[in-house]
Length: 255
Image (tube, rainbow, N blue to C red):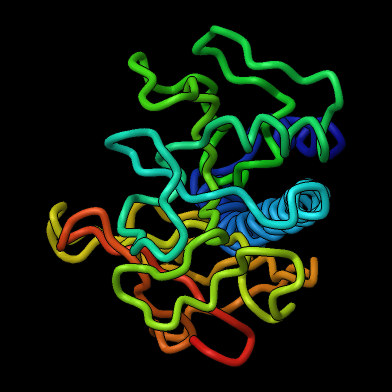
């Protein structure tokens, strides 16, 4: 009798039993993967909030010293927009000398621009983790009076008297402007030139490629997540071309 039991044990699992185990594993994986993806995105969103708060400190220190925030820059000439000019450029396209000082004041006091195309880990606070590291010296042909310094992956929306599609702009020019106005935000860009009204670049998105929302840094220094809500919580404020629109919530009170 014992010998027969040992012979039965040597037969191992049947094909049906193996398929049953594989099916159970597949079901468990299907249940766990969305939770893991959600946890990963939640972690990135937390890092993003921390980055924007650090950006806010750097901008606050700059604003206290210069009595205003950095200018928006014209990407064609490299020069700052004058007071009262309408800003229509792609956000973060040109970041020059003022931002070198923002980095020194709020990130690392001995920071200096390097003539390299490599990413600089000290600049990571200027980028949502979903969009990769900022790129220093991202243009080979500096224009105006400054060298290009880095292309950050947040939308800096301060320093503009008027955006091309928003009046009033509600963009802080100095620290004493209303604290409920947005100073920086995650990228939400609707690019119709790529077909189907795609949102790109896009920091935080849903599985179907639509915006999930965006972290916003307000002029009082706090960071808040704004849900997309089918676009009702934000609005197009400026554009690079007629088919490339940049979107954010202008203030706590006003989409």
